[in-house]
Image (cartoon, rainbow, N blue to C red; front, side, top):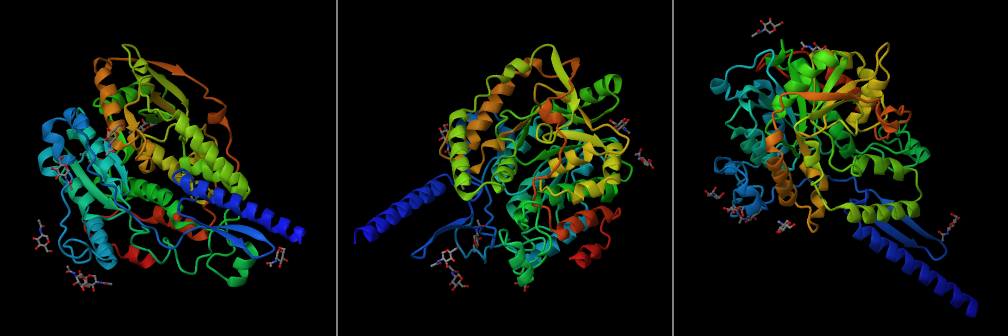
Length: 526
Ligand SMILES: *[C@@H]1O[C@H](CO)[C@@H](O)[C@H](O)[C@H]1NC(C)=O
Ligand SMILES: *[C@@H]1O[C@H](CO)[C@@H](O)[C@H](O)[C@H]1NC(C)=O
Ligand SMILES: *[C@@H]1O[C@H](CO)[C@@H](O)[C@H](O)[C@H]1NC(C)=O
Ligand SMILES: *[C@@H]1O[C@H](CO)[C@@H](O)[C@H](O)[C@H]1NC(C)=O
Ligand SMILES: *[C@@H]1O[C@H](CO)[C@@H](O)[C@H](O)[C@H]1NC(C)=O
Ligand SMILES: *[C@@H]1O[C@H](CO)[C@@H](O)[C@H](O)[C@H]1NC(C)=O
Ligand SMILES: *[C@@H]1O[C@H](CO)[C@@H](O)[C@H](O)[C@H]1NC(C)=O
Ligand SMILES: *[C@@H]1O[C@H](CO)[C@@H](O)[C@H](O)[C@H]1NC(C)=O
């Protein structure tokens, strides 16, 4: 019967179309928020349906430690610093589990407690104790070891680095990362370990508990099934995803740990500078930070935040954040379209041309005073305890805001300070911090591997060398664009679960600890 045939042809075409869509999704996996997801196509004779199944089961962590440092890059690194870039061959013989130094989770938890307890400061004997005005450089580290190596090389070449304390804050315990950090010999170094990581809690909160509601569970079904926290999806109706919450938790824990808990900071009044593993600093960044401080004291005493630079490319702000936000409200087909559009846009604009930047370095260096904005000023920024105390007063705003981005949460806080203006930032327009990890792990094939980006930054900095260490700067005051002044209303979501909010608040309640005291409260909480 022709009608039936016609029907099955149409169905065939639809299936083919869906298959093409599926292919496209797979191909664009690198830019798609569902890159860990499985797409299922059902054909149950009458109805065709597609389901995107988020793969929340196990977070596969892979240490990013490629031996891809090119000759080009090495040529611009002093030979004595090559040791930080050398990847040692893994011991191939023997089983993975039997390899010496690989710990199971019990061992890792124990090691973390012990190390956090000890609060060991390496090289204190060589460079003197931490003073109240010592610059503390806090570096948030996950698993991108290749980038971390280059950050360390850039720090090693900075003037006055030997007067600072580097605090590496880890949410992933790995012997190779730890060995690299401990090998630093050019200044004082401390390692702190985020104790609530997914690595150490793979099957329980703050990791993914087997009884947690799946991200896309419907509210009614969740309530019926009584999965954990069924009553508290986020503002988009989605349930918690452990891996999205970890970064905000870690950032907050690290700041609390440094300002409120370490023994060596009990009288600290200096600045804390926030960096991440995939940043790269210019050799005069400490000098510039001090210059920003003295400029602020004279012209802008109300500037509470100092910033060493902004992003090279604006289109990649919050690759996960904004996209996630946008796509959550779209239908499935719209999501696919959006992902493809995004991919095309990025391929077009992805030339990694840093050439514009030397214009920003000139004999008269400019700084800008403007309202602090999360996505523009979250890189290489610093503030002191006075400012931290004002953040502490409003901890609930940070912890209860339904947004899994720490910087948007801070912006939310900034915009809602009773009786106070929002944070002002004083920022140098010629950046002293670069985001070398910006093009990410997923662009191996393009001209965007670590070596390429790093050699570009190296060359840029070499060209800018005559303009480093400026004796003075000129400040311009700007009201900031519409984007900076837009009042946040709704968050990006991902922070609806009460357990996340409680853990966040809990972190602020831990008092200062003497070196090697009993840390049993950490065990008690979880
Ligand atoms: C097709 O979808 C309708 C409405 O969602 C549903 O009632 C029906 O049972 C489905 N048919 C099959 C075969 O699943
Ligand atoms: C990495 O590269 C260095 C220098 O090219 C080489 O000596 C070393 O053996 C390499 N390591 C691995 C694991 O391939
Ligand atoms: C490699 O592992 C084997 C067995 O675990 C050990 O005997 C050997 O000493 C290791 N070699 C190196 C270079 O660590
Ligand atoms: C690796 O471990 C498995 C199970 O523990 C064992 O059967 C196997 O012989 C080991 N292989 C080597 C090379 O040690
Ligand atoms: C972890 O490894 C240690 C030895 O390194 C062993 O004593 C312990 O039983 C192991 N724990 C688990 C849970 O496997
Ligand atoms: C640091 O500040 C604390 C508290 O203000 C003070 O007691 C301590 O003496 C100061 N330390 C130094 C080395 O100045
Ligand atoms: C900390 O920063 C604030 C705001 O920028 C500033 O007013 C204050 O003097 C600074 N405190 C110290 C001890 O330097
Ligand atoms: C990185 O990209 C450059 C060219 O852009 C290429 O020469 C080099 O081989 C690439 N390295 C790796 C490890 O892919």
